[in-house]
Every structure is written in structure tokens, then in C-alpha cells.
Length: 308
Image (cartoon, rainbow, N blue to C red):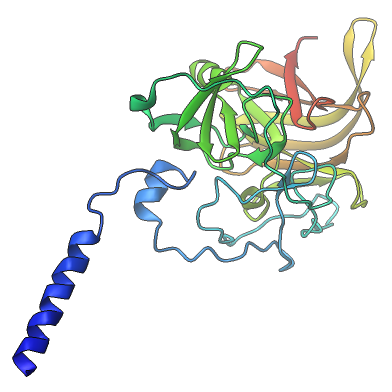
């Protein structure tokens, strides 16, 4: 009887092993490809800021972001969240959204969502995305903003779709789409600096901070990431004059801005007339000027270069 019981256990174990899928290589998360292969054992702790309070990343208009570019969710040490006057960033407010309501996204698609091109065999494929790229709930700029990518690297594209404006979009996970047309143009000709809503990973890391308001309502945390070493950086307000943009008042300066330490400006956008500017000397010695505003279409940060 004992021998028969042992034999039955061996047969059951062999059957269970045969049912386990082998070599399941389809990605199941929007994390960077290199992190999917090496970060599975990390625990995903809550992210905390300099004062130990939880940071909620809500991109766009109060939409909760799970942190696409933050697979581990841990807070690095050495946080530098002080401005030149010694004030600290009141972490725990939404770092990436001027409307910090913290509502969860509905994830619904517009009724006119374009059909996905019929090329199922090519998916998934790898696409490099910058940390500053915005994520939307559907393949159109009229959909709900979901935050930013958060970490530069290669990501799996699982579907493609085109909108009515000539843009090709790629899906990196359910209800998370990025503009592939912009991503590929960016890769061909990257700007010296990017501007976007700050994500929770960036806010928990070391960064320069300008705090222009004590308000917790309608505030935006704008993250400027240098793509090269920049010198004589000036952050200021702009107005539109007869000959184009004109600087009104200087708010913050840096001798040097490097790719490893972003600059975050805590500001308010009071309607479409609020425009900030950032200027600097790039690695070739050329002085560059960028205007920064908030989109009236979807609440995302827009930046464009201008000349003086």
C-alpha cells in the first residue's frame, strides 16, 4: 500500500510539471526591457519624499499614475529638495499635475478610437522612449493623460494605431499609449533639454528645486531634464510682446544643469496666458531659449524653442 501511494504521488507531480508553461517570453509589464529581465525580485516599496510622506504621481488632470518608469518604486538616498532660500518641497502633493485631486483614471477610450493596423506578428517589438514622454489612455491627444514614461530606455510596443492628425501611436500596456511619431523624431534630433510633469521617481531623487508658490491647489511640478551639460541656466517668466517673447522677471538660476540632476519648478499656470521661459548655453556655446506652458487641450506641459 505504501509503495502504491508513493507511485501515485510521483505520477501527480509529473503531471503538474507538464502543465507549467515553458519559456513564456511575452512581456506583461510596461517596465523597461532591461528591468523586466533583472528587477523581478524587487519588492515595490512605497515611494517617499524628503519628509517621509507618500508621493502620489498623477499625470494630466488628477489621474493616478502607477509609475511606468519606476519598476521598483524605491526612494534613492541623497535627496536634495531645497530651493536657494532653504524651503523644502512639500512632498505628498501631486508632483505631476496642476490639478491634484488624486482621482483614478476611468481608462475609457473615445468612441472614435482608430483601428489597430493588422500586423499582429510583429508585436511586441522594442522602442526607445525618453523619460519625459507623456502617456495617454488612448491613441489621441484628446484622451486622458496618464503621466509620463518616467525612465528612459527600451519598452515593448504591443499595438499600433493612427489618429486623425497623422500621428502613429504605440501601446505599452492597457490604456497606456505613447506618440511613436514624436518618439522617433525625438531620437533622430534630441533637444538639449526636455520639460514635462515630474513623476514620483524623479521627485524622490536628487534634484534642484525652485518653489514659486506655497499653494497645494492648481500647482504644477515641471521637470527639466538636461540631455547634455548646460551652463548659465535661467528660469524666468515670459510675456508676448511686439517682437515675440520677452523676459519679465528672473526666478531661478543655475551655473550648470547636468543630465544626472534635473531641475524642478513648482509653479502655477493661471490660464493660457501663463508662460515660463528657460534659457541656457548648450555644449556648443550657443545660447538657447525655450518657452514653457500648459496645454489647454489636455493639461500636459508644452515647450518650444524660440529665437531672440
